[in-house]
Length: 372
Image 1 (cartoon, rainbow, N blue to C red):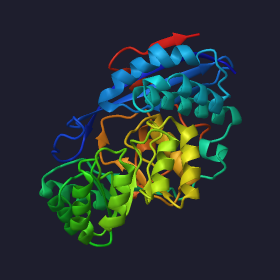
Image 2 (image 1 turned 90 degrees about the vertical axis):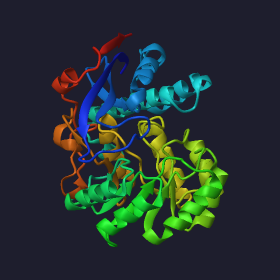
Image 3 (image 1 turned 30 degrees about the horizontal axis):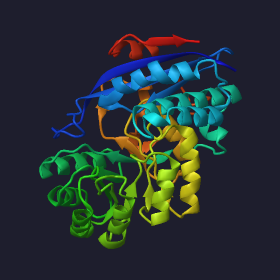
Image 4 (image 1 turned 180 degrees about the horizontal axis):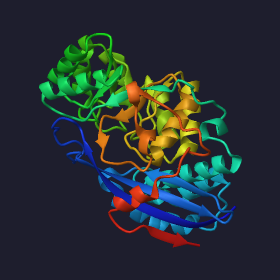
């Protein structure tokens, strides 16, 4: 089964948070950019993937169209692991993380989608698991609001919507205090700080936050590759430590595990290289006694892939869903979390192809088709 064509789709969809937020990761989050990749084979099967990007989507799209696609066209679509290894090694000179790895993520997800369709099985069943009939608990991953009152209001809305797990993206104590007061002691509360502090400051902040009963403190150290420093925060700070969305492959995770830096590993399927390395990292985490809770800050094919992976690898962990309302989605109701729960689609592969009309309506540029 040969890869005969690849096609990129870059879309921009408006989104609402229900409250004003501060700038977060260089954006205001009133719109969401997503980069889809369609992979076509000579046997009539097609697969869909997604590359991480948000504001960086145009860079990743260029990496797909100018580097990855020319190397992947004509290759065997069934040789997922072999192709992943060859392409990762071929392009390693350009960095072990970033746009080329995000591009490889999209290709890998699309090839697993094809594999599921070829077997007429949902991806989670292809991986040896049944989707939980009752679905999985989700956690509301809030934006960064900065104002304690806005944080409290957003957290309260999430609880009213049925979520029993709330994650903040704040970087100071008053916002965490406001959220805990608003939701009470029985709702799980997590904090993702997105790598703001040197080690000594991270330890001090962890101690200051301890009274708010956080389930985990996520990425408190800058730079994220300071694994020894993160291990110090875990030892001295008194709060469970989570990280991994910025890791560069399974060996980066292995380094964190060896140093005792993590309680919770958070690989991101659209950033780490796709489903293939996610499976390897899950095995490593289990061998080191580290809990797996995948990162999922997107709503495209990577969201569906994350649903299947979590159902197969960590069904008891809460599933990350950004606390946003999208103007439209190519997957419609599949990205919703009614009552704070998500369900795994049961169609073959990822479970559904994106709605072509939504891709057309919200396109930032015409799709780019590349042929062998």
